[in-house]
Amino acid sequence: MALTRSSKVAVSKYAWSGRERLGLLRAREDVVVLHAMRWPDEISPPEELLPPPVELSEDEIDGALMDSMPREDLEGKDFQDSYTEALAQIIEAKREHRE
Image (cartoon, rainbow, N blue to C red):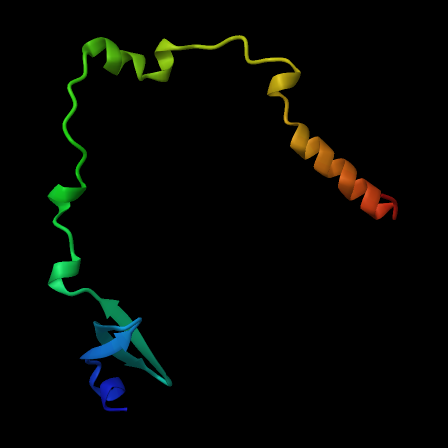
């Protein structure tokens, strides 16, 4: 009730999965919301997430562009959407009460 009136939040500790966790409690009307927070040792520096640098040649960069690899041979039954057609047949069969 006091949190709702003051529009403030409360920092809390709670146990979850056998660990002590840090949380933020907010009260809104008749609901209490717990936002899970992380301890500083649980947060990885962004540098750890970066992939290692890679040297690329100009040909490799140009080759990555779809403009450099046009395909005109993407036709035929191997490139048709048979799933949608099969699904339409199943729906029609269900409408007619048959297998």
